[in-house]
Amino acid sequence: MRRSLAAAALAGLVLASCGTDAMSADDYFAAAQDAAVTYDEAAAEISAQYAAALDDTIADFATSGASADDPVALGNLAGEAASQAIVSLGATGIALEQYGIAVSDLTPPVAAEAAHGEFVASLTASVAAVAPSVERLASVASVNDLGPAVAGSPFSDARPRLERACIALQEVGEASGVTVDLRCVPAAAVIDDAP
Image (cartoon, rainbow, N blue to C red):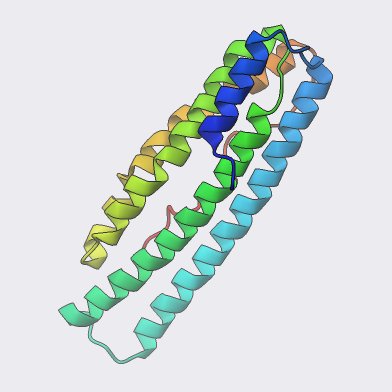
């Protein structure tokens, strides 16, 4: 059975309370950066696949001869685009959960404990936001509804907290004399594009 991020975070708290030896700042931030790179690369691939699928869907619509005034054709376009966003978001949720587990398994140095805890909590919140965001996308009935459904989703709403927590953790590393890049601002947004 796959271990959930919430369970991993709880296990991390239990271990911390039992006096588990903290990692050195160098080791902790190196491991955190490795986890960040793994997630960032997965997210970039998911984003590229989503963009390609969306481009294909729009191209198919453009060459189908369907009228841009045909509500049935536009409804089908919206449904297909929403389905692609759902697939992308689901894959992102899995990658984020794996990222969260990797980070929560780390035992931060004392100076990073608070920032580490908030970062893990923000990852947990982002993963939890996937399901309600999928529900929102599943209810899209028109092309005009798709952009607001993506932009106003709980997942999109969770992103600023995650980015702030990541930046705060990275700043702790830098203040500790460690050069670290946690890829806090994603190079590519996973579901931000909509027709």
